[in-house]
Image (tube, rainbow, N blue to C red):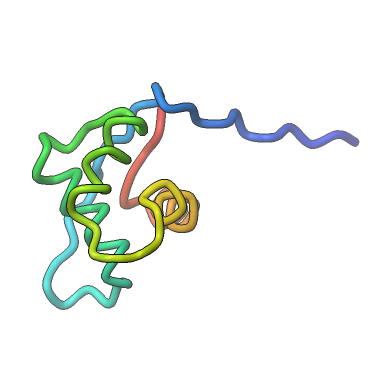
Length: 84
């Protein structure tokens, strides 16, 4: 039996915001920043454009690309975003 890997997302893959967090949602601050960044920019961005935007708004020493990679799976699994 072979299992297929999900296709890898690229910088040109489009991220679409499905849900906007409420003030009461218990989410990590960086995860909220990703969602708010998408919401502030029409709810849809390519991954490359999103990372550029995150570099401007994230208040962390970690690179935006590393933060994105860390939270991407959880954002998709919890249905906050979709990636095509």
